[in-house]
Image (tube, rainbow, N blue to C red; front, side, top):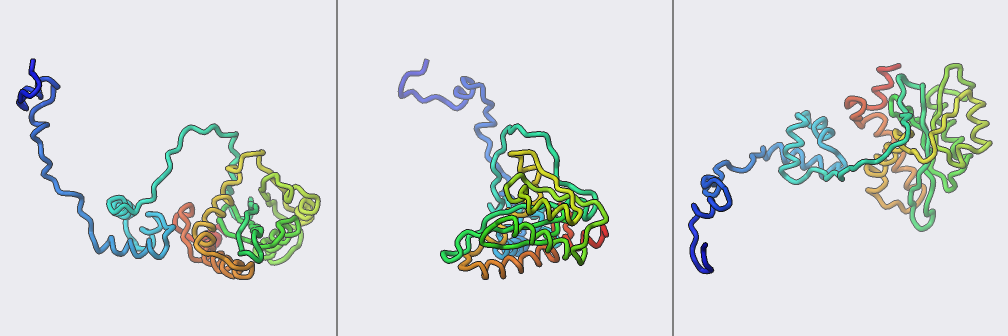
Length: 266
């Protein structure tokens, strides 16, 4: 038994702890991962210009392999950290998917801060669940049934060119909020021949497409600015909506824009 102060050889320590000596003496000879700095500089330019862009979007914009972009982002520390997801019980799923344009639309409301003068205003939107297009949107001081009605009418005019009663089946999905269950809104929906479709209570994932749209809009437009008025917010969001529909590639659409998807499916 070794006493305090006695020197113990590495061989003896390895024997006691059952560790191979070559493990103790091993020194790594491989250098760190290599990075193409020219590619890294191009990727960094896209990240600085569009801080919300993921590696797939960056790869599409630069015409690069997505695995290459992901590897460089991970080495450089540019990869967005993901939150670990544990077990979460889910209700019976009724996803808001559609197999063709104008089969199912989705509508919802969210809040936008517009400065001390106008304060919180309501953003209402209607989107096509197949093409992901934003068909109509309104920014109003009071998010009431009148605003939701006007947004739906904007969507109908933009898609069909008129407010005539539809001759083809169309479902409109929403939550069970007071606005979408109000008499004024439900009567308007029936008048245009649209079938209302409500999600189960407390299951926003069943209306997940427009929930994800609002998150994307906030991350890529609203949260990047400090609006001082309702008019400023309307102008900025209007430009973003036009860019989203006609220029922004969508991962769920195989990097096509919503407008391109509608032309292909029409």
